[in-house]
Length: 268
Image (cartoon, rainbow, N blue to C red):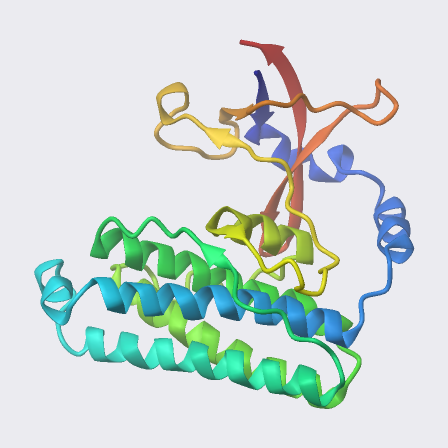
């Protein structure tokens, strides 16, 4: 196993440390074209995940379980409404894809780790936040105005879900003046740990998950801020530059765009 150092101090020097903007643009322009059907199936993949998640939570835990965990009425009833919203999103996107002559992806097999009510609602907050960033990030690529409007109407509902669940967790419902748009691969990287397998006849998606990074709290400071050095491990693989010598950077996704920090490797 290899481990990595990413220095948060590099945040102040992002303009110097980041790859050239023109190079990033060239990479984006060289990427394969993504169709509206691809985007709808990408969205449907996420909606299937959320839909199944809420159905499993509501099947496993009763209203009494939620109240015992500190989530008083009407939280349980509202969570049932959130679940119904996600099921409606699945039905809508499935119908839209069929109407366009495309094959909609089917539900996969998932593992959410529903050990407790509190852990489940913490996971719900993550999924809703990812959903908001996913729709926001994909919006610029949608060609059809009708699809764009539909995606926008789902995005606003997902953001309401996110704010409500954050408030229930005693977190700030609206933590920043801007939401972070995430790319297809960034979103899929966050969703992939919950997905165990998918039907073999599902249409392929033009996405892939980034390599896994692991954070060991025992090897890192309790509070991370600008100037802090953190250690992340890269289980079962070693990060190498394509040419074997160029500097590698870690990209930290923020609401104003990625921030790059230098990567330093050392053996355990």
